[in-house]
Amino acid sequence: MTIAFTFPGQGSQTVGMGKALADEFAEARAVFEEVDDALGESLSATIWDGPEETLQLTANAQPALMAVSIATMRVLETRGVDLKTHVSYVAGHSLGEYSALCAAGTFSLADTARLLRIRGNAMQAAVPVGEGAMAAIIGLEFDQVEAVCTEAAKTGLCQIANDNGGGQIVISGAKAPVELAARLASEAGAKRALLLPVSAPFHSALMAPAAKAMEEALAAVAKSAPVVPVIANVRALPVDDADEIARLLVEQVTGRVRWRETVSWFAENGVDTLYEVGAGKVLSGLARRIDKSLATAAIGAPGDIDAAVAAILG
Image (cartoon, rainbow, N blue to C red):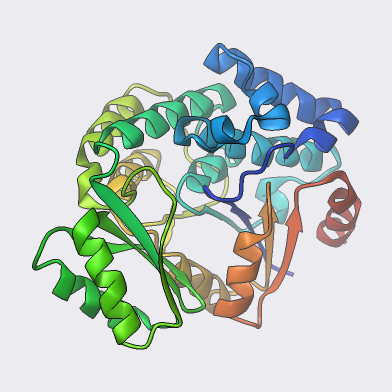
């Protein structure tokens, strides 16, 4: 069995996530406490008790999802799962790439929490509310969506933000061009083309101010080579140099999340099992649609731990 660990991105957050882990495992509870200390506030209270609208804020959702993923990792580690020994690669969807890098030792937990708070605030502040938009296009191939974006971009910025695979592509940019692209996608035969309830046009060139903020933040933080290679979002290839990782994280703010290509890379390079570490099962579902040869499992609740440890340790 050749394993990769994947880490979820924004959209997987729910009020109460990670609470059962923290209640049952001291090592998980310690992760939430460290994140709270790093941010100077009780983010864990928001994660577990809400209100939902506060957790959904980008500046909270990003470090919150990372905290749940790393809490899960710490429980696995205390039960004998060693990333370097048992896992060949890590990857994460958008903010999940930071979770993957924290798990692999590139950033400390406290620094990762602070980086994601900076990232969330910077992404939110980059574009005035109402000027940007994102839309999910379901049922068209990549080339078809790219053509739609090219046509809509004649009126303003519109680009592919997430190539999630399985016929699911997210576009991002200025509000009117994205709305036009969604209409054009429907006319081109998309099963669905729906605007997403997001507060900013993530992974588009409009995020350039946030990319600058992340360049400065990443330059100031301690970085180490990951203990296993990370498959970078914007490259869909393994990277293990700390400085290159930082450059690609800056590029990721305005660039496309190449998740379909990432999962395909796993399947083409000997990986047969993907474990989704943290909240939800979104990435597991995407992986099954991208390549049915891959086995998938999600680890995010106490009941998932024993089965995962038994399978990984053999």
